[in-house]
Length: 114
Image 1: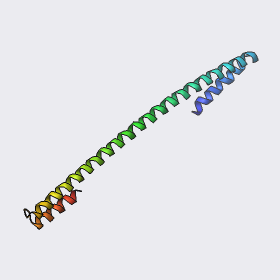
Image 2: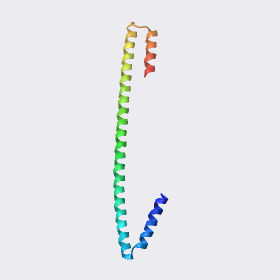
Image 3: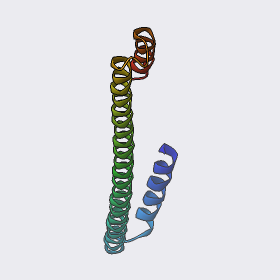
Image 4: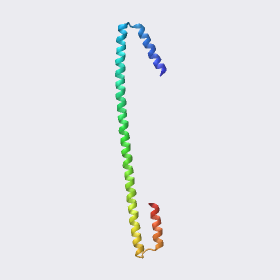
């Protein structure tokens, strides 16, 4: 970076020696115009790149939120299903179809999944 700046400075000094004052002012104006144009182009590219990154982040965030919602829905559905099974097992126990011991074992198994 320093050597590049030094080279530009050296070229500028050589040009200073070669041009008359009028020509020098004209050349300085040309260089200023080029610098302004380059600056504008770089600003535009930076803004475009920044917009692309923002769009990318937004898409990733939406995808993560959708995945989280889907996971929460599955967990809720699974929890509801497990509760329904527990209710049916309780009814079977009350009807005398399964024993208290069998009910307790299945209840423990289901609650561990939740």
